[in-house]
Length: 313
Image 1 (cartoon, rainbow, N blue to C red):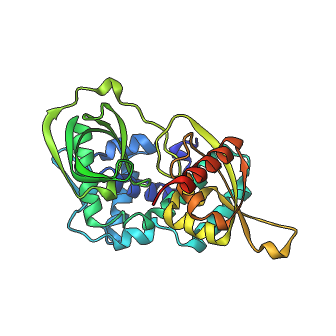
Image 2: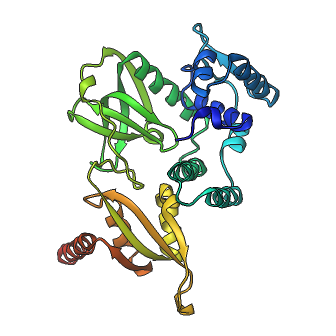
Image 3: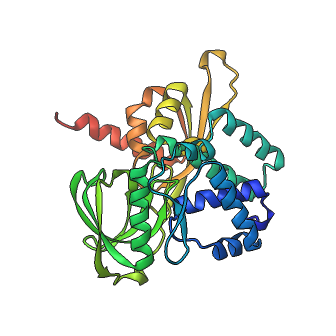
């Protein structure tokens, strides 16, 4: 990964702005200077530039910085959210830098996720930032959190969840936490949290905190498998709307047959039980040209389709 000092002043400023939005009241000027390997005067100049641009920079009693909660964030969206045209231009520039460069590939993936933040229930609105601030505070103070009436897709339930938050990813709209009731690691959608409460109870399971890999369908699983599908435009559109993190792994492919129209390849690693992907394939099978790999996914879809045929409605 490139050293932070290798970024230009403008790139550094954008990364600093994103950092204090994603982790409000966490970074001091000294910590930011150490992170980006510049002197503190450079960070102060960046902050002055933010203020000139109309951002209201706030800090707490320990001089940790954030954007003021009273400020609207429409300007922030225009700075941090790429348009499709801008994303395509940046992708082409990154491609020219070196298609085989792993650092470039990581940056391309992250850029795709930032582009899709706008689809993730307005990540930069005040309500989202308020939740982020509370979650970050609970993590820093190592206090448990109660998610009030959390809507879970996997268990089809609405109930309170008592958790220890140890990792937060705004760009993926995900909180990594230890669920005290399930006694296991769970992922929670930040945008799906109606209300949360920080309790005075300290963490008791810190040794069990472990960041588990998340696939583009937002399913946590350390046992991931590579899948390769070919899609028609209809499936491509639905996939982007329902699972925007898949954007990074989709590419247009050329075909010899003009009757096929435009086709797209989806190549990525997903959870080994194929959660999320299964429902998508079954629901939009008429717009899926082929499952190219793995064979286990083909067998799985056949079994699920057979179960569906045998089900009594």
